[in-house]
Image 1: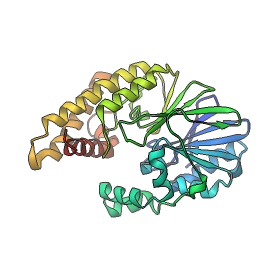
Image 2: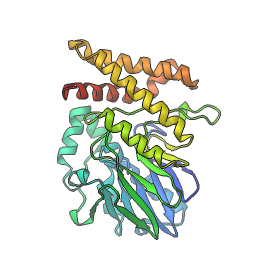
Image 3: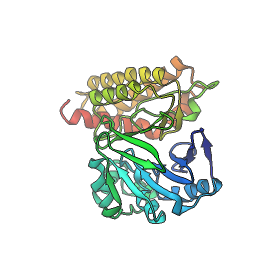
Length: 314
């Protein structure tokens, strides 16, 4: 079932359908009959995006840009498939990510390493390469135009070295991928949203992530759009919560550094405990087994990311 949420300013979140409902957003921006896609989800996202375009009286030929925050496959796995479907589009991506879109073999292999071959195949299918001549590298401060609407790319490492956040000049809002954490709709109570950082393997870098979050906060955006999931408001409060929770992840990692064979499970237990405490602190409406089910994938990925950070010599 197709689902999209309109936020005004020509911006909508389209549920990609990846893994479960409201996990993974493809953001659609429309300006004067031209469209841009921010992050793509997996190959299976394309029908949902086509339906969202059709609802707005647009088709595949009206897409000028596919813009990626980073090349983790829940954000970019469908890029090649979308570029094949959108004849007039160019792909805008961080310089460190461009080569992985042109030749995704290493990206696919890294995904198998994280999830296992069977799960990676089930989740992502075949990763389609993007022709090099359609890829535009976006270093810090570079911008693209969608029918006169300017989007500036900011180099924002910390979650990944190939991560960019995208500032929409028209609204002042920012598309932040995973730099500004996870904000699942199930965490929301009476309009108050929740937030939790993503420390996914293998390039978690706490000082860089703190600096990237501060860079976003310094822009004072009225809203930030995260891939997991959609629009986040009350940005300054969420930024403070992310800083605190990143520090808690670092403390957990350092406590588990010398745990030997028990380290992996201790890290996962520690992330679970952090979630329980945050649910209590913020009065999230999901608790207990429901909370752990909601964050099942993230508990594994955050713990594995902390382990990779430790193994890198921290």
